[in-house]
Image (cartoon, rainbow, N blue to C red):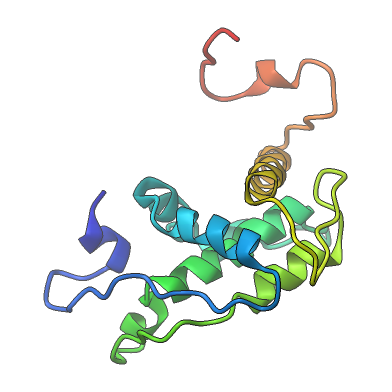
Length: 163
């Protein structure tokens, strides 16, 4: 975990802790899940380091839902860690903010067969599992691997542990 790498600075900037989240009405499940992800250093580094162009549609193709979630999560993490303000050379913001874009993405469609509904209590663990599954599927499709096809695990570029 390299804070200088995450915050893209040489120690000359004061690093503010990640910001809190505003509850949008029964969104504790979402806020709890997002706060856990914000405080996972390696996860944040790997998502924040993704170039925004890595999911641009090629040849008129469309992004998978998991790819859109990954890019929304990238934007969310950049805001939560104050990276956007640092790039603009603005002072860090410390007020809590509302994760509206991710909330809309999660409640607008089914994620692995489950629809998270606005205003309804949901389970944080279930959201985390569905988010990670959707992101995983998006990554596989971006790499040209169809996880619905037989033998897809043999196409992974890294060796797997025996299950």
